[in-house]
Length: 386
Ligand SMILES: Cc1ncc(COP(=O)(O)O)c(C=O)c1O
Image (cartoon, rainbow, N blue to C red; front, side):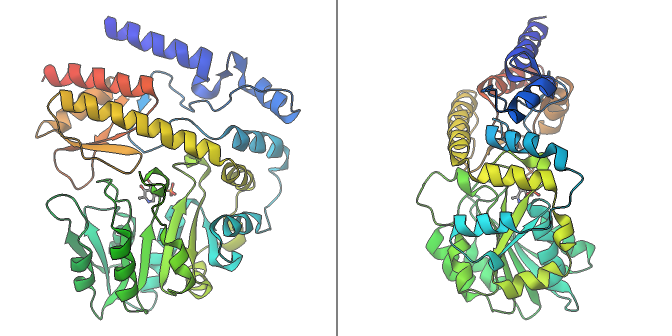
């Protein structure tokens, strides 16, 4: 009963204040809010939570808890009558090049960073069978595609404290290696590499082997001075850095990501892309606007930092030892009952998941304060009922 009241309060809050189900925005119907935005006559905080079910506590797929930037939503609203038009230009590449201080020819935008990782893997093995070297556990995209292609995967275990072992990764590279996949910070552990060691490793890989550094979560790294590997793409011709608008920029559903690399490497990858036809007119304007709203990124990072502090404290007070992550999620060992717990939480509409390839570990995407609280209270209830 108390739980139902809890849920009702949450649902009420979402529908009236934050725009649950995308139906209302501060009590204004979404279409009306959009019309006001197009005419420039609103200052509604329109981020919304984007869930069709207002009772859902969705913390399983690392989405931005704040929603998209107000400016991105405005840009989409302003462009909606243009959805009959293809996007036949490279404005987003140009904006990204300026943002990162690289040439526009060094930027390739994709349908999420997933397209970047896919085309890199296809390019690596095209007419050139071999193996991929990757840490384990780590993001699975490149090794899974390699396996689908019938290629070998060399998985290098993390060290006992969940760090990536870069010297072992380098040692695993052999004459058959076509691509090295490094996720930094790593998903699902949230751990970050030492930048100098990472640079040494990248430079030591033979230059006919693609090195892909996946920086999907780099904005969430604690140290604001932590260097991206993007600057290395200027002189390391086999380095690809993949980035996404799905996390810190809050555009997961818009499907925009990009790779930064030497043009010769991008050319190899683009053979497997549908080229300009991968561009979505609305997603492109959303990404342009989101890129210009770094304040929204900073607010996102801040709310995630606060949410992590809350989750660490609560989980520790329950006797757990969550990993200190540098990402948008918290990873914690829960033990052998994890699967049952996840099922029960799922039934209560609280969605968290197992950290993939980490038995007994739960991965919780950081949500808004009320979502983090809802997770903690449901978790306490369900684990004591086991
Ligand atoms: C490490 C990492 N890389 C890439 C992706 C792919 O994201 P997207 O295709 O939305 O850019 C994800 C998604 O969760 C991820 O965790």
